[in-house]
Image 1: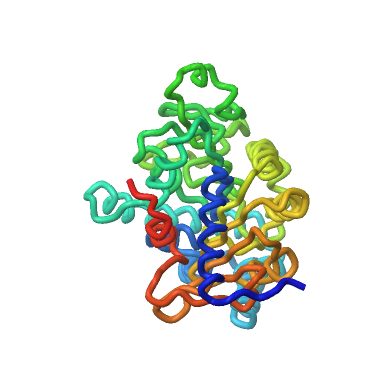
Image 2 (image 1 turned 90 degrees about the vertical axis):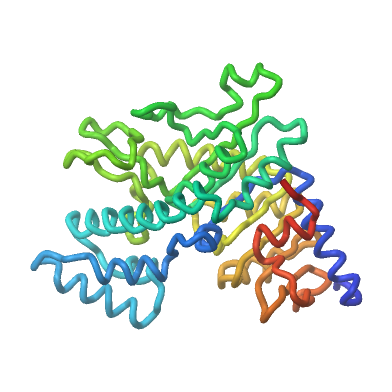
Length: 351
């Protein structure tokens, strides 16, 4: 049984684990909470958006009503969609409406980013991590938005999602460390493995993955490459580009020397197994930050809370931090360590 230490020592330990995690140049795992902080709606917002905008055909009416009934009972979008089998037409509407919502939210954020009204904490973190000898930082995310890509560009680093660069981006399926650019001493790149797709990814008429600009009029033969919640989620990921992207994500997670989990709910089967296995094998430093720790995150902590794990969440006007020494948490009054910017400030990681 782990001996409990004083609260002051507990706070010091929590910060030390977080600092150790950053020092290892961790693989970052981002969930919807990482983007919610910048105005990108998460699952609750998406559920409401789908209810307001999806117009089911007559044959799909009963299915859609069953979905809404499940959602009212459980208030969980993914659980509700997994309990109904939707038609191809209804599934396409869900994908299209999801893309439209994220794109609208992202445009508002992008305007603020350009005007200087907001900044991305990830940009500061990338600059800090690339002051080391590391040439590549890896991010695994379930998010459809491009905030990670913006952060990499804002901090003047290359960004690789597995697609080529240019106006029509083709899926070339390679990690950045296999690029000839790595021969340059100043090469730095963020590899972003988007296991559920991206709002600018499509499958064209010949079934090839392609990335296009937002302002393009999308041809009817193009299908958005987004893995949305529901029973079709797992079959879709056996196809490209998801098959290769998930393979690269698995490789990143399996080789990680630390994990920084931001707004991640620990409820995705494409990420969980490798993260848990690496945690058990190596016991690397793991820092988890979230406004509210989701049930999946709490379950992870209850089963896998080793001596190098810390989790931060908001409580009242401060932050509560959980470690193996203080599984019930220690309180940091008037500090927002549950946010990336707040934690970076505490660790004195500035621009």
